[in-house]
Length: 405
Image (cartoon, rainbow, N blue to C red; front, side, top):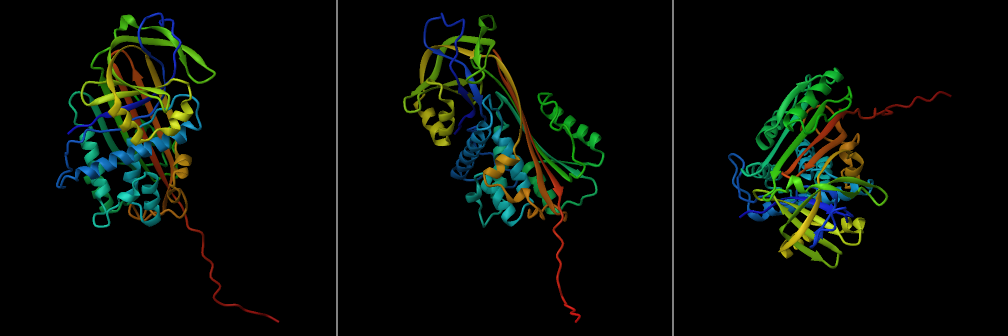
């Protein structure tokens, strides 16, 4: 069986100089969210039995819902385009949860929308599923998806042996000793790692390094897909792109007449368009007919996307689509707290499964880029989660009272 890896796109109307062409016109994208469905052919982690199909579907659905929830938190703060990789964010936090205990672990899993998937008989089931997910989304031979993880660790910290083993077995993560006291050098090491792993798509993750940091978890993902039917570069002309309700700019507009799978949702007043890549991958484009994008974004769910996919039918259209590049950067700490992930950021955090240090999460940074042209799409994202030590407040016990009269 196979599903589809999706890049989901929210789209706006376009007023283009090229609109004199005849036929149905599907026009300008606005907001971008990312991966929704995945190839579901089972490839289990080494020495692990294959998870059952229903559990696999459940994880992908819940990761999609996490993505939509986080998307809304980000979109509420920004009027312009939004682009990020939910699978990169969730994988990084899943890795962090390997060393979290009790309420700290519960909060992370609650924020990721996967707490109810915890198996009391198999505490590592979730990590087995994440391992499976990474193996399968990176094995398609017709488009490129690479994903990997790393832990940059202060060189004088002793990591728990079990944590090291699990980090390797489930996530195949690189463990890289650094000295955060040498902030400039460590920043260069981390940024160079990110730059190399994303083929230069993301030049740097960090602008500065906190000398108090003890750990930095990272996860990167790189996507390169070619359209099944490329656009003709000679047909690309300048058109008007609406950045938001108040700003419009001129951008190169690609054009293609052909048969695409589309659907019309009367309830949500939008058109759905699927643009296929080679292999089991597609870009899903949503075009609001009345320009009410905030309402449409609020309604997005995994169930709604699945419903739309079932209603798609082939139709011959004339498609105008922007040739564009987006670079986005987000600090996610506040948004994750709003999603229930509170304890990991406080002095009550319990990461005793990682080391003997009392640690809490200090920063969650996410950077993403996407480049769409006549040939296809290249996208990359990286997530960084840093941890710093904290000290418990001193305890003062009054053991004896002396009274003088």
